[in-house]
Image (cartoon, rainbow, N blue to C red; front, side):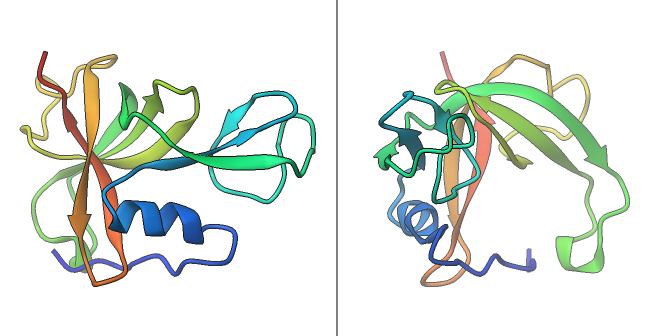
Length: 134
C-alpha cells in the first residue's frame, strides 16, 4: 500500500538508517541509563546530552490498539490496526500490527510481538510488528 513516508532529520537519521538495515535502533542515556523513543539529542529523563545509539531486540508486547475501519485513501481499503507496542527495552512505539487478522480476537493485549521491516523506498523501511512465535 502506498503511504505518506517519514522524512528523516539529523536527530532521527540513525533510527531510519537502522530500519533500512533491518535493525531497530534506540537511544540510551549514558548518565542515567534511561532508554527512550522517539529519538532526540538529549535524555528526556535527566536532560543529559550524553546519549548513545544501540540495537534493540525488536521484541515487545501489544500495549494498545484501535482498528481503523475507514482508512485514508493512501492506506488501502482494508481495516488495519494502529497500535502502541511496549518494547522490551521500555519505550513505547506507535506502529501497525501485521501478519494476523485485524480483529479483536487476533489482537490480544499483551501478546508478544516482534519487529518486521517493510521496505518502502531505497532509504525508508517501516518498522511494523507481527505476532512473535513462541
